[in-house]
Length: 109
Ligand code: SF4
Image 1 (cartoon, rainbow, N blue to C red):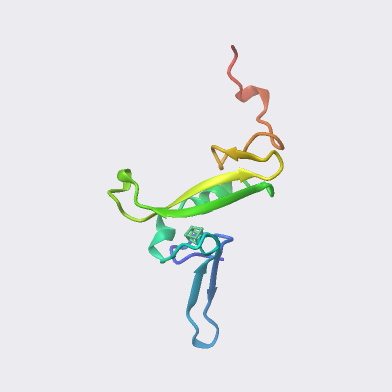
Image 2 (cartoon, helix red, strand yellow):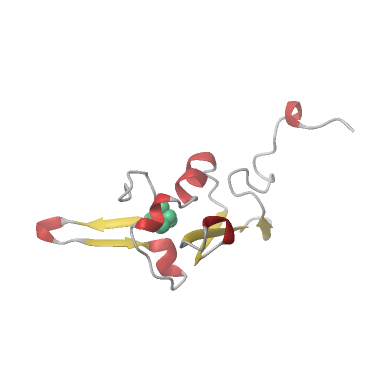
């Protein structure tokens, strides 16, 4: 479903049927965090979903006020692979277990 900022996000849910106006971020709700539409504008999740559709990737979101964003509220993501039971440093790339990069991308030693 499209977020208020127009990006496709599998965690966004909006119910506008018959005058309803219910909008929820299921990812933040699962973490017990409060959501507001402005968070979608800078959220990295739609980009992660476009880059990596691995079914074993689990995202966890928190809302923080990082210094580089001048203490504005931002969604911060941590990722975990359920197959390898490892933390994934770059969710856009994945852990490399299921989808290894072709040798052309490796740096010779
Ligand atoms: S805050 Fe991020 S994860 Fe939540 S609905 Fe908006 S884009 Fe999706």
